[in-house]
Image (tube, rainbow, N blue to C red; front, side, top):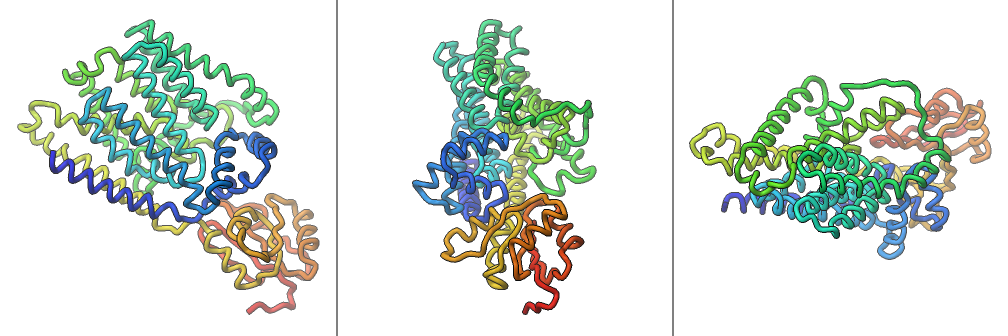
Length: 486
């Protein structure tokens, strides 16, 4: 117990350092979009986020937060850190009441150091809130199942409604809990049915405005069915072990998934065979609950992508609804060696005791790798543009520069542009810079039309005099052919 306390203290100190260092990182492209949305008047902000297919609730809250506390990177990320801290505390309380202190003590450092939880906590986006509401939904459902009090149904309804309003992908958590209730009907028909009806009622309350929004935006279209096996496996590996190249590239991802499969087997076998767990959660179908929590979201995402052909299996944050269940299963597997009487005599169980230490150490290493980069490109590229030519107008994806130059009294003209035809690009170059000198700024992870136009479609008499590149931000200095730039 003393060694466990020392280990937890070291984890808390290391996590505190990581969380504090990461707050000051440069913004990502999505966070620049958040800042840009906070500058809009409230009606325009709501309309803008709805047009983009996002719920405006988080952005309205961030708009108020920025007006009160300022718009520095670390200030805008504080709400996400608070949501992440709330997720850790809520999961600890949830597991302590359901499965005991041993499982809760293991789950605490596992979630605290997980790369996906850390990155979401350092993002001025609604992702950390999605994790919080996902854990809160599981907590309220388990409390309803154990207590059977009507007020828990109200809490379940309120959590579902708030989560869906905060982040639409929270619907994956709702689907997982609905499947859990559906499969648990043989265990307790009354509680399972009322839990399922409460979830469906909250969804129906938001169904009409959601369908109207989807119809007005025409964002979804059925284009045939194309099921993928490799993409969800890849995403699940990155979600379980972190977004690290040794984990999700090549055959290694299948190896780590085999290790993870062994952990799952250990966890489910313990839940089924342990007298301690059966007595703690005697009236709660914990195995069905955790199975739905972990596996329904990736299956639903794969089905959604197969039908709509939208790229939703590209980033682990889409599986945030599964993260809480994954952490619980890991904690149960690690705690199993502590609760079994033969653990002291079984050498394999003695080695198993090292697994949580190795897992947390690995997660810390992966997270430190994420911290090596000092933010995204515009944070470092913006000062270079001013040093080279501070008066030239900038054409392209300019909202990151709007943030980086927000405190300048005199800044270069910014002309937003993204995907342009050749004629539109050439006309914009002439209008923006009559003297022929301008910047073209591109900021994304893939090449787009602006890169192609600079290389191949510059108006006659102009040249690309200089190219700057920092991470995924690129800037091209366009000048007349007779101009020399030092």
